[in-house]
Amino acid sequence: MIEKINAGSFVKLIIVGAGNGGTALLEQLHNDPSIQLLGITDVDLDSQGIKLAKDLGVPFSNNFIELIDKHHNELDIIIDVTGNPSVQTQLSALKPEQSRMIVGIAAKFIWELLESRDNNKKLKERFDALNNEMRSRERDHIIFGSNPLMQEVEEMVKQVAPTPSTVLINGETGTGKEIIAQSIYELSHLNHKPFLKVNCTAFSPELLDSELFGHIKGAFTGAVTNKPGILEKANNGTLFLDEIGDVSLEMQVKLLRYLQFGEIRPVGSTETKIVSTRIITATNRNLQKLIEEGKFREDLFYRLNTFVIELPPLRKRKEDIPLFAYHFLKKAVLKINKIVNVITPKALEHLSEYPWPGNLRELQSVIERAVILSKTKQLDKEHLPLSIQSVETGFDFNSSLMKAKDKAMEVFERQAIQHYLVKGNGNISLACAYAKVSRRTFYRIMDKHHIDAKKFKK
Picture 1: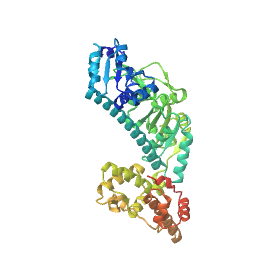
Picture 2: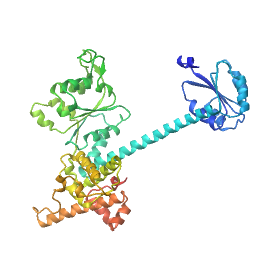
Picture 3: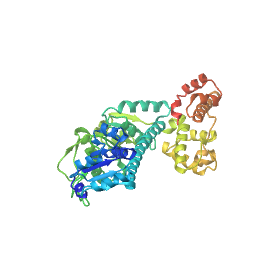
Picture 4: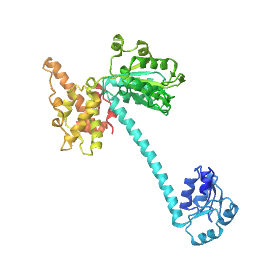
């Protein structure tokens, strides 16, 4: 039998018994390319396993003696799952010399093991699908929020994703440029193809050349084999180039040639290859200013500038800070394994007024730190860094009384509505009950501040 497997032949097998065990084996083995099922037998032709064999087109019989005798010269394995001593005695007398016979506990172990493997595989598939769905939901939740500028970004992502166009994402460090690129990829027609990411600042110019375009054996010291570049690996897929404003002028020339003609040439090679990879780039630098300084090629800029998405900094979408704070709270609680479920209004007030130079990335770190420091089930002002605790909140005394009042009322309304939506998990009826106002009033204030209740659902 082992020789046949090594030679690439089928293992030819008969199953005796078509109850639970035989059915489980049949389900597991009928699609195995290394096995040829010669048949399954059972005295009851109405048994579960025989019915399945009919559906699958597997030979079946109610006489195992005739079936084994028919395949006497080619049979490799007989698996008996009947547990019947009389059957086992007859099988022992019939067993061809070249065949193996698996009976009793061993046979039961095999089908239970295979059934367990199948169940684990299905469970893993369900888990992966659910995990991907949850990750997708969380990503939309954190990227877009209810700010009008981000609602516009969301619409732009949906419009450009199905196209083959090059996309340039501009935004400060920590605003979520990579997550926007990921969303474009997932909404595109290439979402079943490779999606690769390169941070251009992580490599020297020489290494970046090899990383993107590949190299041939002997191109430089240490190049002991041919290596395909990331552009080639992402062929027919998507490549995200982060910090594109930091690449050297020499590398810009090679990137421009690829964008113009689809050509790549590995380091050390005289031959070019044609690949088709969609490019999404991102930068936190002002490319127009770099062009004026002679540090960025204008022709490459116009190639990358086909479709531009501008990500606003967190300080320009303060109304979403409570939403993001609670999102990061859930992530931190899972990571640290600690029960913290409330951010006090005073803490939210200070979080909302802080300018956030590090944007979402900084907010996430602050919330995780606060969870570590908290000794109760809530985050309060004293759990925040001193730089955030010292931020002035409340009235703007440099403004007129009425303007200060209107501003304070806007902040209060926005934070209150978000608080009740968080408390009600996005359920409008629950939020209205907590706020003790009518649905009409609640909806009016939501519309005024462009708040979407769906973003607060868990």
